[in-house]
Image (cartoon, rainbow, N blue to C red; front, side, top):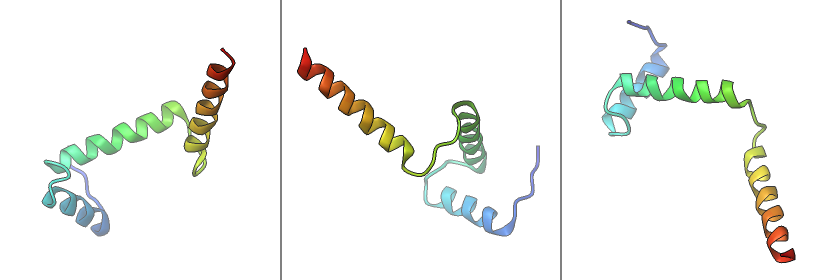
Amino acid sequence: MNIELPPRTAEFVEDQVRCGAFASPDDIVTAALECLRADREFGDFAPGEPEQLLEEGENDDNSTRSQA
């Protein structure tokens, strides 16, 4: 499969390979598609929402432990 990327995106891909963040453009596409798949499977969060939910969960855990 061959794809054509906009110049700005192609430059980003080249920079990521050049700096060693990814071994190849194929690795970048695979990582991006895995992120897209996870986003579709688990839904979208508002900015900061995951951190807020984690904090709420940790606070609930701590209050449960102190009551035990």
